[in-house]
Length: 169
Image 1 (cartoon, one colour):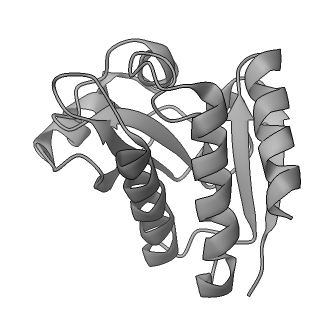
Image 2 (spheres, one colour):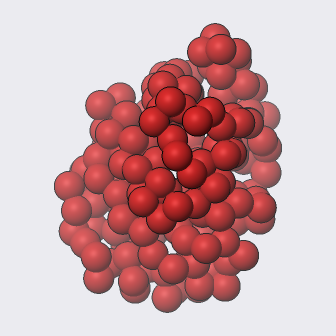
């Protein structure tokens, strides 16, 4: 079954979806960027639960409750190890792992940030290409997902992901 793919600009902690994805490190502690925003909005209980499930291998993902956030779950995708560096391979694996968890939890909607483009230093254009390609390719495998969003915080991210998604269609 196919799902709708959207690119939106805004705060991922305020998006109306079943789950949001955190671009995590493999120890699952939540520092700055998207992780910091999720922790501030949802509470430190999210980080505590995540760290109890770690460490995990870079490229893997786990889910936790959402604390005070208005979503059912937070999916923590380890896009980097303790060196805080990432690669297209890890971004691809973490995106697939997140989608698999959403399916396992029978969620109908999920929102992704741009993996690894903050602390990880990965180029936005390359990230957008990898993530939109994975999500588009995942559509035939989906049984529960109806909406997948890429939620970008700024104009550059929004435009870059919009352009990448147009190329995948």
